[in-house]
Amino acid sequence: MKIAIISDIHSNLEAMEAVAEELVNLSVDEVYFAGDAVGYGADPDPCTNWVAENADLAVAGNHDFAAVGIIESDSFNLYAREAIRWNAEHLGEEEARYLSDLPLTETRNGITIVHANPSLPGEWGYIFTLWDAEMNLPYFEGELCFVGHSHQPVVVRMDSDGAVSIVPGDSLHLEEGSRYLINVGSVGQPRDGNPAACFGLIDMEKSEFSLIRVTYDVGKTHEKMSELGLPQPLADRLLEGK
Image (cartoon, rainbow, N blue to C red; front, side, top):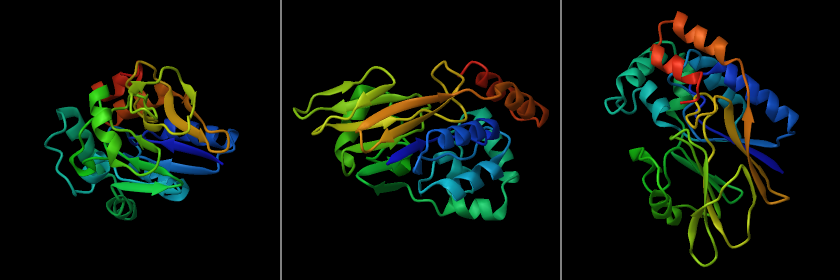
């Protein structure tokens, strides 16, 4: 079985549609969504509806909950707050209800998904360092935990001896007896210097994981956000993946 783990679409319809097409090309069996369907971009309803219709497992992100008023956006930067207000105003009732009902964590097939971190999922803390990852490794069931939130893909492994390290590269064989905390990057707003949409793919039968990049029409997204009056720095950063 092939499972795609996607996160942080952030109302970027063009990126989401490109990823959706790639999921078909890859013959993906299930889709797990790690939060933030909305925020930043120009298409909150279509992106939310795609998640609702296609995700076999889904959790909430902080932008999802901020857009529907479950949490405040006070801790967001100025541009993110402006975008959240815009997204909230353009979010339909059914879409808002769907986002409101999303849980913070889910586990299936030995895989845990959570937007920010498994130790305190509702406090939205980032996993930026190896130490952050090591502190969170005891807080999930099974051998695999997938997160988003930072928009920066990375694989952290704890081996059978308890040693924790970052696994280099975009693909790896999942070793028996090891535990993994994996950030699958962002579909709609990558921040690792690569503007291509990013998501994770796990082949359960082969015990293989890969980070997949998909190019999309970034210029179209940039132009749409600019025309609609969304914060220009949010549109501009898409062009460089920052």
